[in-house]
Image 1: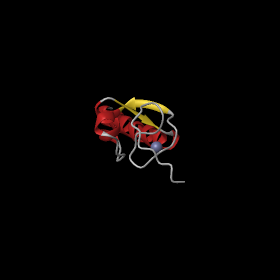
Image 2: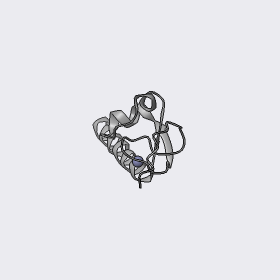
Image 3: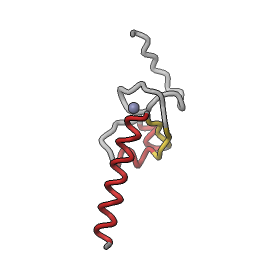
Image 4: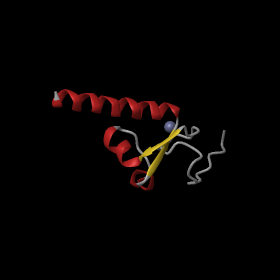
Length: 75
Ligand SMILES: [Zn+2]
């Protein structure tokens, strides 16, 4: 497994640092850095970030919790 190609071609793999999984969804990069501890490329953080299934789940969970918290404070 020494075929780690560091191509920055978007739409292929997850943008999270150290993750080479296939991308599942694209989300606003700013929200990823704001809501999660995931590290994405600065270029992705400024635009859209591609996430694999696992990281997308993490992102969804983080944004969901944020929404829940916001709803609580608004009630
Ligand atoms: Zn990933």
